[in-house]
Length: 81
Image 1 (cartoon, rainbow, N blue to C red):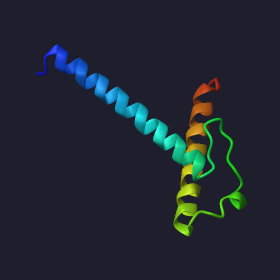
Image 2: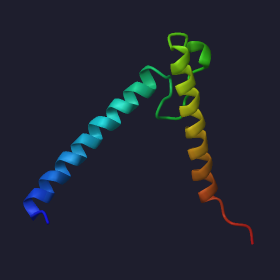
Image 3: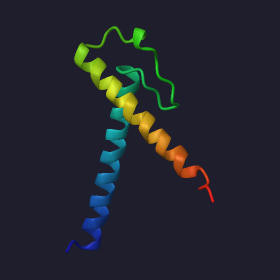
Image 4: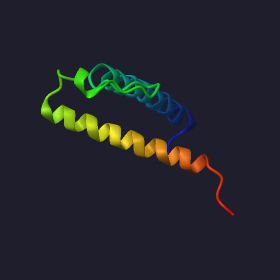
């Protein structure tokens, strides 16, 4: 078992690492793939710089984001009686 000081230090390190990874992912999604945090998705025609493989990844990311958004919206809808 870790002592309290070590747990607190580990918590701080993990929290900071998460912030760094979150910012890196956001930068990559916006800068390279044209997928913005506000939900805006740039048209595929603006993504000519992407390789075929990266275009495939972009489409997968978009599909996943749509699925997640649908699930969030569905969870907020009242259930029918």
